[in-house]
Image (tube, rainbow, N blue to C red; front, side, top):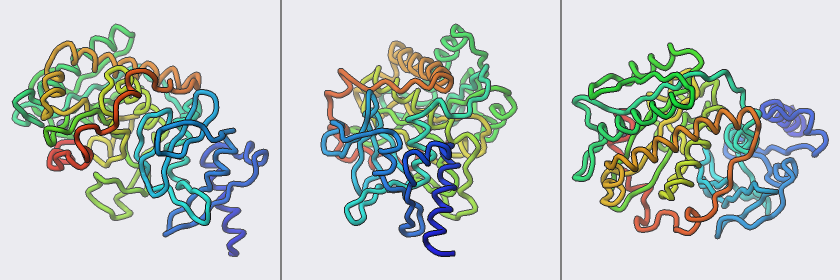
Length: 360
Ligand SMILES: [Zn+2]
């Protein structure tokens, strides 16, 4: 097969993947290129498809957008901002011969579902499965300011009440202080029809580390910084990639907007509770119990109530967005006045790795 024919085949495949086969003819062909075994799409073509032009965005980044949508990126970086909220790409943005490229996987599994959430296949959601992480002998992250299992449960119970008041049915994986395995948590979600799954956790790290981060399952075939394996056969995705990222975006952006916490991003992972779930699912990390200021806040009922309201409102917005296709609200005001990662230098790397993976 010639390179030209192969490329045309890939373009067709990508268009089908994105559900844009009809529109593609009108905007010209998307040229895909294989760099180091990974398919990439030229960003010039992507912006033309969305009708984006150069726009003011995140300082130090190249930004494009139209209307109230803005995307900011940087070559060789996996940091990627949409409407000023941080995402971690599966592969870095590349620059080749004066053109910038984004991976086809990131285009179809991240960028397009966020920019066009109305295209996410949205099953009927009547029930939310709330999973307060840890419990019983497993305390999770512990500091002088807070104990994770208690904070997870407190936020989860408040979230339960708010969701019920909003008309949802709720199933708790635990509503008291007891231990259950990750497999038991997943089984509860998988046997609950018309549900989505929210696992609630809090973080530990250096005392300077702070902020909120939200995890969804890494797309099929991709690894993640939190993957335990790089064997291709272990890198399965699931059928809810679009729903996962739309749900994560709604909950995470609302939480960052409301709390003005440091935005540690929407990240990909292969935690046990995300890998085998057959429902739209996120794992929400509401802050660091090991940070003096954030840890004290996390242990207070009023902040726990704020986090629960953020998650509840995010779930409602997810369901509205995937029906109506309304764009995420661009962040304004307090959230944009503070510096990302202020005070910690490298706060991403400061997370205690041993708390990841073992109990999620
Ligand atoms: Zn945890």
